[in-house]
Image: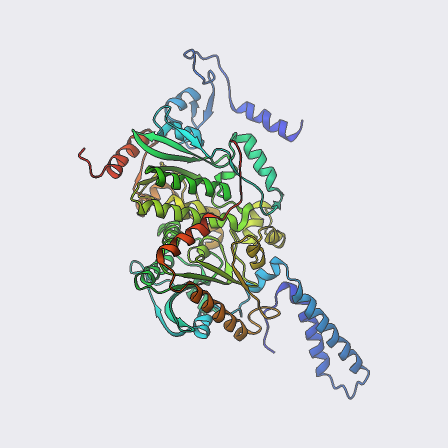
Length: 293
Length: 322
């Protein structure tokens, strides 16, 4: 048995199928369950879907992919993706351990996405917005040229069409494999946020697990209102880097959403089930400030 | 003899130089057969010196950029600028010595100056946290950016940091927030901004004050998304592969000029800026001054627009059909 077959077999063992009965037409496979990584209790897939992938026992928020995020926030049928084909190339011919082109290819295969962020026009609670969500499955949704370009275009399009911007972030940071081209995306995206702000169009960001490094330190946190999902890890330097630097263990809950709220870095920690309503209310205030409620 | 800081790649040369010194201490009149050997060693040294400093790898340059004797921001302030008034504090938390802020004059141009500030010795380096700012450092920088903007002073920045400090308090006080705000603010300043890479350009902490209308870099300075050691330990699980990774990351001044990120490179004396600092100070004064002259009198709207276009054009992508 090859190593990859062994992993597949192990993966298969993680799910136990029983002959449960479910409503016809459900896409959820019958009786599939997984274990909550926080409380270790068993959660049925059907229940997870119903609870927006929040553990019904302990409230742990499971990670979502980009389209799950968008499905959560966008009004039904309102999302219209743009720049879906924008992707990174390998401008530096980067090879370390394995070629960057290989990482890109396998990320594309695995996620079905071209890059680590999905952006499009949508309405949220009836408000015209540009909505974006990052997808951690794609090389940790790290920001290289393509992610930076898509974010920049999202802000420019919002400016042109006078839309608000709502972004759900999740990222390991800047993408090492594109070197300085990646670092400069931090300045580029922050500059586009500034232009939207000058036009007094609202920008709401939702920090989700995990948002780190060059993405936190650029467009993610310079929003008008910064929300965070419960328990998300958000920060600049990764916990391991900090531990190695200061030679100390980090306190429990360090760099969590709740920690950030306590230190004045985010406006509110919003449970997933309330997120859409909260974003809608915020847009009511920020985008229709001059109108009577 | 004082102990000299030796960089990895110059070790063979330094060893040979030590040998020559030893030979020269001998009484050559008593050992006439050694005279020829001294001459040979001296010749070898000359040849080796040339080859050692001729073809520097990215990793060699990283070491030069970190050389303890390399001129630091405060040396540039003292040598390149006149009428320097240092300004302190972020008006919210404290005064981060890892960032130096000043009003100063360079070749007749009145400007605001921001720089990462490393120390020259251990005591200074502890006070300045080895040039790694906390959020209050970036907030001090932003204060000076606003001041420059308000009074129409061009901004000159001197980049030299291993990176923003990765620590508990830095995170508590919003390291990412401070950097992000600085990036947004800097991108919209209505005065000319000339950035100069004088040493290390470590990631977001460098970028926070590290871009503008012109980016000038010293030949042996580097500018990178991540330190080669950190990149090697993530991708190879082996920090020892840093020298390989340094080449991959395209982090030297020449690499970055090739990518269109760096506008000008200031060449350094053989072996690095610390060998002939005066020469480097003169070149920096001249290049900064001519960049400021070129940008002087530009319409502020035009400045902001062209800076935006400059940033906007950076990146290499493909447009698929999706």
